[in-house]
Amino acid sequence: MFTIATFNVENLMRRFDFSGFRNQLHQDRSLQLFEISDEEQYRLLEQARTMAHTDDTRQLTALAIADTRADILCLQEVDNLAALNAFEYGYLFKMIGHGYRRKYLVDGNDSRGIDVAVLVRDETRDGKPISVDAVTSHAHVTYTDYGLYDPVLAELGIEPHDRIFRRDCLNIDLRIGNKPLSLFVTHLKSMTGSRNGFDGRIASLPIRQAETRAIRRIIEDKFGANRAAERRWLICGDFNDYRERIVITGDRWNGYDFTPVREEQSALNELLDDGFAVNLVERRPVMDRWTLYHTRGPEERHLCQLDYILASPSLAARNEKAVPAIIRNGQPYRTIFPPDQVVERYPRTGWDRPKASDHCPVAVTLNVV
Image (cartoon, rainbow, N blue to C red):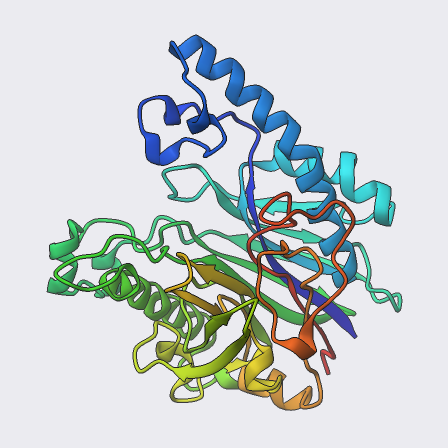
């Protein structure tokens, strides 16, 4: 048995971002309360704000990771290995002791420099050795390489020679107790950029659809289209898309209502509709699958699953009773929970911040038989 988790840790950065001085959209809301005379003063204030905020945040992030009890940890939004090492030494180690001695990260395509990473223990909790056979990045793959260019992408300013993945699809081939397991870790295009009357999710959907088609192509090329279903593999990460959501109405004075809504269009359909992969989180009740709370104010609020552990059909069938856990204790108090799902928050969690992340970790224990 082994436990695997995926978690978008929300900007585990080693660099200060000073772009907010010139672009107010990047400026923290606390700094917008003050009149700042010049860039030097802005830099000093931004450094002070970031330092004060980061310690609490990363304590909460580490608590959430510790609660996954993962042997293999897939992360998104990591700056670099130096940031990862500093986080483990300064935070995770204090909670779990010696843990993830092997860390894998390859620079991807994100303009902010945030990458996907995989952390691996030497052995599982029950003593089975974990070894890594190969690490393969697919950040270089273009639309032309895989024949996935669609004319609608031109409307988004994308050319055929551009790279498909906004970050990467990082393939880690492991052995757990000498049995092979392949991981494909990814972080798809964000739901931004409204266009032609479409909201950001629908406008950016063609990019995520190309990414999921590329992930499928990578797996089919690796194992063979007719044999992929028989092999042991998992796709983990933040897909920035959902097939269903829970729409929230009402208010805290009169009570909230929660209504599940199914979406016709989703990048996940490329992997799930024909049974190519299995979304293990769908083994949870429909009201209890969410990993993120989204709001733009009272008129737009919902809960949705953005974070996935997708299993090959054979691995899912061999673990038919495995139900993933979703760690929500690091969510801020502004997150509106269905009444029967409220959890005890970690100490020092704030209304909006500090928090472990805007996402929740997802973890599942599987057998590699």
